[in-house]
Length: 220
Image: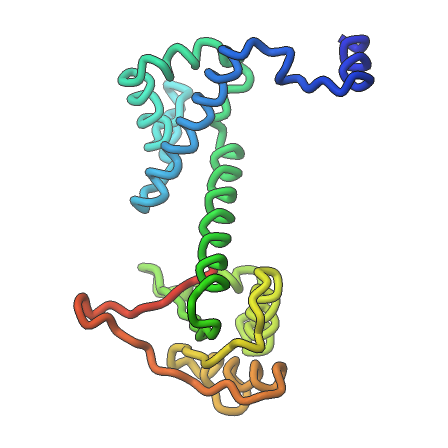
Protein backbone atom coordinates (compact mmCIF):
# COMPACT_ATOMS: atom_id res chain seq x y z
CA UNK A 1 0.00 0.00 0.00
CA UNK A 2 2.89 2.34 0.77
CA UNK A 3 4.56 1.59 -2.57
CA UNK A 4 1.25 2.20 -4.32
CA UNK A 5 0.91 5.58 -2.58
CA UNK A 6 4.45 6.58 -3.64
CA UNK A 7 3.72 5.49 -7.21
CA UNK A 8 0.59 7.65 -7.30
CA UNK A 9 2.51 10.64 -5.95
CA UNK A 10 5.27 10.27 -8.52
CA UNK A 11 2.91 9.81 -11.46
CA UNK A 12 0.18 12.23 -10.34
CA UNK A 13 -2.50 9.55 -10.54
CA UNK A 14 -5.52 10.18 -8.29
CA UNK A 15 -7.25 7.55 -6.21
CA UNK A 16 -10.40 7.91 -8.32
CA UNK A 17 -8.57 6.52 -11.37
CA UNK A 18 -7.77 3.34 -9.45
CA UNK A 19 -11.40 2.73 -8.55
CA UNK A 20 -13.75 0.99 -10.93
CA UNK A 21 -15.78 3.72 -12.67
CA UNK A 22 -19.05 1.91 -12.01
CA UNK A 23 -18.29 1.66 -8.27
CA UNK A 24 -17.24 5.32 -8.20
CA UNK A 25 -20.56 6.40 -9.73
CA UNK A 26 -22.46 4.30 -7.19
CA UNK A 27 -20.57 5.95 -4.33
CA UNK A 28 -21.41 9.38 -5.74
CA UNK A 29 -25.09 8.48 -6.10
CA UNK A 30 -25.11 7.21 -2.51
CA UNK A 31 -23.65 10.48 -1.12
CA UNK A 32 -25.96 12.55 -3.34
CA UNK A 33 -28.99 10.69 -1.98
CA UNK A 34 -27.95 11.38 1.62
CA UNK A 35 -27.53 15.09 0.82
CA UNK A 36 -30.97 15.20 -0.83
CA UNK A 37 -32.61 13.63 2.25
CA UNK A 38 -30.96 16.22 4.50
CA UNK A 39 -31.96 18.99 2.10
CA UNK A 40 -35.59 17.78 2.14
CA UNK A 41 -35.71 17.80 5.94
CA UNK A 42 -34.04 21.22 6.16
CA UNK A 43 -36.34 22.85 3.59
CA UNK A 44 -39.41 21.51 5.39
CA UNK A 45 -38.01 22.63 8.78
CA UNK A 46 -38.00 19.09 10.16
CA UNK A 47 -35.59 17.80 12.79
CA UNK A 48 -32.99 15.28 11.64
CA UNK A 49 -32.38 13.58 14.95
CA UNK A 50 -34.71 11.91 17.40
CA UNK A 51 -34.74 9.67 20.45
CA UNK A 52 -32.20 6.94 21.11
CA UNK A 53 -33.78 3.60 21.98
CA UNK A 54 -31.50 2.13 24.64
CA UNK A 55 -33.10 -1.32 24.53
CA UNK A 56 -32.72 -1.61 20.77
CA UNK A 57 -29.40 0.28 20.65
CA UNK A 58 -30.74 2.33 17.75
CA UNK A 59 -31.56 5.93 17.02
CA UNK A 60 -35.13 6.68 15.95
CA UNK A 61 -34.93 9.86 13.91
CA UNK A 62 -36.53 11.34 10.82
CA UNK A 63 -33.24 11.18 8.96
CA UNK A 64 -32.56 7.50 9.69
CA UNK A 65 -36.18 6.52 9.06
CA UNK A 66 -36.37 8.45 5.79
CA UNK A 67 -33.04 7.01 4.68
CA UNK A 68 -34.27 3.47 5.38
CA UNK A 69 -37.51 4.19 3.53
CA UNK A 70 -35.55 5.55 0.55
CA UNK A 71 -33.40 2.41 0.51
CA UNK A 72 -36.55 0.31 0.17
CA UNK A 73 -38.00 2.43 -2.63
CA UNK A 74 -34.80 3.14 -4.58
CA UNK A 75 -33.30 -0.08 -5.87
CA UNK A 76 -30.24 1.71 -7.25
CA UNK A 77 -29.52 3.31 -3.88
CA UNK A 78 -29.99 -0.05 -2.19
CA UNK A 79 -27.48 -1.56 -4.62
CA UNK A 80 -25.04 1.32 -3.97
CA UNK A 81 -25.32 0.81 -0.21
CA UNK A 82 -24.04 -2.74 -0.60
CA UNK A 83 -20.65 -1.39 -1.77
CA UNK A 84 -20.29 1.11 1.09
CA UNK A 85 -17.93 -0.02 3.90
CA UNK A 86 -19.76 -0.64 7.16
CA UNK A 87 -17.40 1.70 9.00
CA UNK A 88 -17.97 4.58 6.54
CA UNK A 89 -21.67 4.82 5.72
CA UNK A 90 -21.73 8.67 5.92
CA UNK A 91 -24.87 8.89 8.05
CA UNK A 92 -23.37 10.08 11.35
CA UNK A 93 -24.43 13.36 13.02
CA UNK A 94 -21.03 14.84 12.12
CA UNK A 95 -21.62 14.16 8.42
CA UNK A 96 -25.17 15.51 8.67
CA UNK A 97 -23.88 18.75 10.20
CA UNK A 98 -21.19 19.05 7.55
CA UNK A 99 -23.73 18.66 4.74
CA UNK A 100 -26.03 21.24 6.40
CA UNK A 101 -23.08 23.65 6.61
CA UNK A 102 -22.33 23.11 2.90
CA UNK A 103 -25.99 23.73 2.01
CA UNK A 104 -25.91 26.89 4.15
CA UNK A 105 -22.83 28.14 2.31
CA UNK A 106 -24.52 27.47 -1.04
CA UNK A 107 -27.62 29.45 -0.02
CA UNK A 108 -25.49 32.33 1.29
CA UNK A 109 -23.41 32.42 -1.90
CA UNK A 110 -26.60 32.45 -3.98
CA UNK A 111 -28.03 35.37 -1.98
CA UNK A 112 -24.79 37.34 -2.29
CA UNK A 113 -24.68 36.67 -6.03
CA UNK A 114 -28.24 37.96 -6.42
CA UNK A 115 -27.33 41.16 -4.56
CA UNK A 116 -24.10 41.76 -6.45
CA UNK A 117 -25.64 41.01 -9.88
CA UNK A 118 -28.87 42.95 -9.37
CA UNK A 119 -29.85 45.61 -11.92
CA UNK A 120 -29.87 48.22 -9.14
CA UNK A 121 -26.48 48.35 -7.37
CA UNK A 122 -27.92 49.63 -4.06
CA UNK A 123 -29.18 47.51 -1.19
CA UNK A 124 -30.85 47.99 2.20
CA UNK A 125 -29.52 46.44 5.39
CA UNK A 126 -32.19 44.70 7.47
CA UNK A 127 -31.76 42.70 10.67
CA UNK A 128 -34.41 41.01 12.75
CA UNK A 129 -34.75 38.24 15.28
CA UNK A 130 -37.25 35.56 16.22
CA UNK A 131 -38.38 34.35 19.61
CA UNK A 132 -38.76 30.66 20.42
CA UNK A 133 -41.51 29.21 22.60
CA UNK A 134 -39.36 29.93 25.67
CA UNK A 135 -39.48 33.62 24.73
CA UNK A 136 -35.76 33.72 23.95
CA UNK A 137 -34.51 35.94 21.14
CA UNK A 138 -32.66 34.06 18.40
CA UNK A 139 -30.26 35.91 16.13
CA UNK A 140 -27.83 33.63 14.35
CA UNK A 141 -25.23 36.25 13.42
CA UNK A 142 -24.67 37.05 17.10
CA UNK A 143 -24.92 33.58 18.59
CA UNK A 144 -21.39 33.76 20.00
CA UNK A 145 -21.21 37.46 20.68
CA UNK A 146 -22.50 39.82 23.33
CA UNK A 147 -25.87 41.22 22.31
CA UNK A 148 -24.92 44.89 22.44
CA UNK A 149 -24.91 47.51 19.70
CA UNK A 150 -21.13 47.57 19.22
CA UNK A 151 -20.85 43.81 18.69
CA UNK A 152 -23.88 43.81 16.40
CA UNK A 153 -22.29 46.58 14.35
CA UNK A 154 -18.85 44.94 14.11
CA UNK A 155 -20.37 41.56 13.25
CA UNK A 156 -22.69 43.04 10.63
CA UNK A 157 -19.92 44.91 8.84
CA UNK A 158 -17.64 41.87 9.09
CA UNK A 159 -20.27 39.66 7.43
CA UNK A 160 -20.71 42.18 4.64
CA UNK A 161 -16.94 42.35 4.11
CA UNK A 162 -16.55 38.55 4.06
CA UNK A 163 -19.27 38.32 1.43
CA UNK A 164 -17.64 41.06 -0.68
CA UNK A 165 -20.60 43.43 -0.37
CA UNK A 166 -19.53 47.01 -1.06
CA UNK A 167 -20.64 49.10 1.94
CA UNK A 168 -20.38 52.25 -0.19
CA UNK A 169 -23.54 51.04 -1.91
CA UNK A 170 -25.48 50.68 1.32
CA UNK A 171 -28.56 52.83 0.65
CA UNK A 172 -30.52 52.54 3.92
CA UNK A 173 -31.01 50.47 7.06
CA UNK A 174 -34.01 48.68 8.54
CA UNK A 175 -34.24 47.22 12.06
CA UNK A 176 -36.84 46.26 14.62
CA UNK A 177 -37.84 48.59 17.42
CA UNK A 178 -35.24 47.43 19.96
CA UNK A 179 -33.10 50.32 21.18
CA UNK A 180 -29.91 48.29 20.71
CA UNK A 181 -30.69 48.14 16.99
CA UNK A 182 -32.45 51.38 16.11
CA UNK A 183 -31.28 53.77 18.84
CA UNK A 184 -30.55 57.22 17.44
CA UNK A 185 -27.26 57.62 19.33
CA UNK A 186 -25.92 54.28 20.48
CA UNK A 187 -27.90 51.85 18.32
CA UNK A 188 -26.57 49.75 15.43
CA UNK A 189 -28.05 52.15 12.88
CA UNK A 190 -26.12 55.08 14.35
CA UNK A 191 -22.88 53.15 14.86
CA UNK A 192 -22.86 51.89 11.28
CA UNK A 193 -23.13 55.46 10.06
CA UNK A 194 -20.19 56.40 12.27
CA UNK A 195 -18.14 53.47 10.99
CA UNK A 196 -18.91 54.29 7.36
CA UNK A 197 -18.55 58.06 8.01
CA UNK A 198 -21.66 58.95 6.06
CA UNK A 199 -25.42 59.19 6.41
CA UNK A 200 -27.28 55.89 5.88
CA UNK A 201 -30.93 56.72 6.70
CA UNK A 202 -33.46 54.22 8.08
CA UNK A 203 -36.10 52.73 5.80
CA UNK A 204 -39.54 51.27 6.35
CA UNK A 205 -40.25 47.54 6.29
CA UNK A 206 -42.07 46.98 3.00
CA UNK A 207 -44.93 44.49 2.79
CA UNK A 208 -45.93 42.55 -0.29
CA UNK A 209 -49.30 43.89 -1.58
CA UNK A 210 -50.42 40.38 -2.50
CA UNK A 211 -49.57 38.29 0.57
CA UNK A 212 -48.97 41.06 3.16
CA UNK A 213 -45.61 39.48 4.04
CA UNK A 214 -42.52 41.56 4.74
CA UNK A 215 -39.98 41.48 1.95
CA UNK A 216 -36.37 40.90 2.98
CA UNK A 217 -33.19 39.24 1.74
CA UNK A 218 -31.21 37.56 4.49
CA UNK A 219 -27.52 36.62 4.48
CA UNK A 220 -27.63 34.61 7.69
